[in-house]
Image (cartoon, rainbow, N blue to C red; front, side):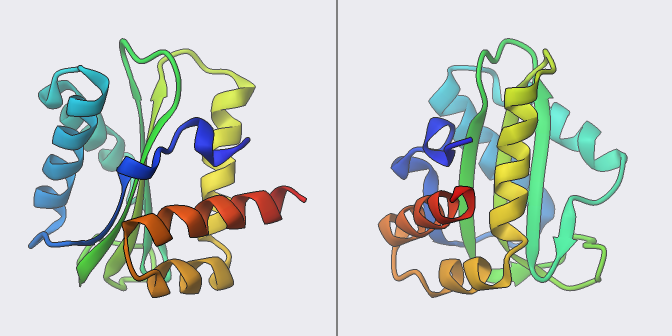
Length: 154
């Protein structure tokens, strides 16, 4: 799946400054709510429910936070590179500095799973993660993930 279908240039940001995971999740829920015209508290609630199932910190300084959101009709993403890494209870106990938030409709279909697989494939690639960390600005962050997505799809 083409990442541009659920990530827009305005939803990629470098140097986001947050003090901890709770602040980060609230910030992301607020941003998503603003873009989607949905209540931020509903989005935050679903994000917190998902975390109770297990950490979404996948290791190597990366987290992929995803949740199904009632009222959403297509996948929606936000990519951030944090100014300073934060503890995220990752599986390798390392702090996280790259996070992709992926919100999905409640209905389950192959396209939505492809969105999650696309994000996981890119962020799980050490070269892609390195390139994202080297991006100078938000525009570069977006361009990098889009290019790496196109390259990974062949």
